[in-house]
Image (cartoon, rainbow, N blue to C red):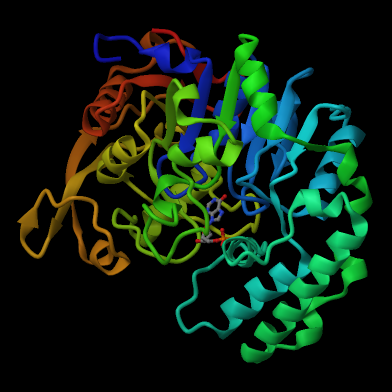
Length: 434
Ligand code: IMP
């Protein structure tokens, strides 16, 4: 919008990554839902049931944890790539619930044979580790960390293993043995690891969905079809680039999209970064631009900022352009989508953190450690609010002048053109025109 308009080129790629640029919950589900209308294939590339994508279809709300948000568009193929860790009970439950609510997922959902499976014993380990920890991460309790640990420790069980029941059961039995030892070490009841039978509960349904995701995507692209790669969580939760150790256990950033979907990086031609018009964080770890208590409560209520997976209240704060600019760099963004602008409609003034100061030093780069991020002082700029509803705006020019100025400042500070603005939960409440 540098020239007074939006720069929507990023929305028209043949292979587009949609990536979170804060601490997750940026509204990626909504952005993917909007873009999925023009795509043929939508694939998730990392994370698992820790994600919660909320999408409104008419008056009906859908919260999807594992199936890509594109499923709500008839006829789209929705895939889970090898980089995902899948809880099969949850996954098939989600598919069945969609079918009950009239969204027919049959034949439209594919799961990579190379994806790793999250079993009840991973969840038991996740809970036991958090209970035993002095420094708690505040995980979602979905077994994500232990499942990725098993993967990199070469102890994991993949979807392909479950296509051979005997082999699958053997690998699960070894996983349970390992989990029982670990639970014992953590001072937890080892029976919490459960049994092979429990872990195999829905394994019989795997052939319905198992596929070679990388091959499917490569074929779709070769046939001129458009592909969306849907990230989960956000840049500041990336295991390498986030606020370690207060992160999730996967690479959430755009580079992981190629690895986690099973394609080469040169296939990707656009990267849309999703930023909320303010900042939220759920789980532990630093949040430099956190509001004071009263404002925190006000914005949480206005924005409905409660975790879609755990129901936990999210901490809220001002827009942090230091995180935004960092995300632009590590993801190679070609455009940004700003969501939930309407949540700020009633505020008399709005602050933006333009950077950080640390021990008297200004303009420091985004720190590598959580303790430094805890110690930074954000440098704020204050902009006038617009104090008018934006929820009916469908073009950028419909927005109040101060709202456009706010967006313009975000764009300048993040250093990436704005391609889309969302002003409400509905599919129609989106601005993609000047
Ligand atoms: P885990 O991914 O469950 O291991 O949790 C690790 C950290 O990531 C915790 O701070 C969680 O609150 C956070 N987290 C995981 N998934 C999401 C998400 O989808 N949105 C926001 N935060 C998340």
